Amino acid sequence: MPKEFSRGRRVADHIQRELAVLIQQEVKDPRVGMVTINEVKVSRDLAYADVYFTSIAGELDADRNRQVQEALNKAGGFLRSQLAKSLSTRTTPRLRFHYDETVEHGVRMDKVISEARARDAQLPADEENSEDKGE
Image (tube, rainbow, N blue to C red; front, top):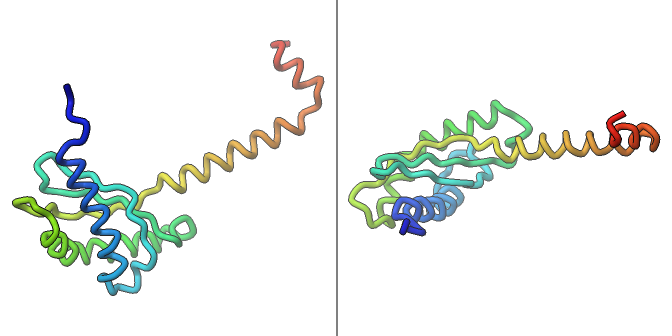
């Protein structure tokens, strides 16, 4: 019977919660701004933690996303030392920050679907029926 909630997943969830607070309250770099931690994936040996984030200005500016990622990676050592205080593991994972594009991708897909529905709604009824019958 597989474990329902592995140790790695528990550590990742703890890191996600702690980083959300630490970034908001402790990171003073103005490039960071408003950041949301979407997901944390921890390696099996707990050596690395890949942290996926989004920012408010995210979908507007790719250069801004890169700057936020650089700022977070620069603050990674400080964040790791703060995490070590609350983690009950022998080692604290090294943090690697990545901009999460899934939200933007979802917005683009929603837009494409909405446009397709709008085009379908504009089709005359007889064309719609002939397409349904395969004529």
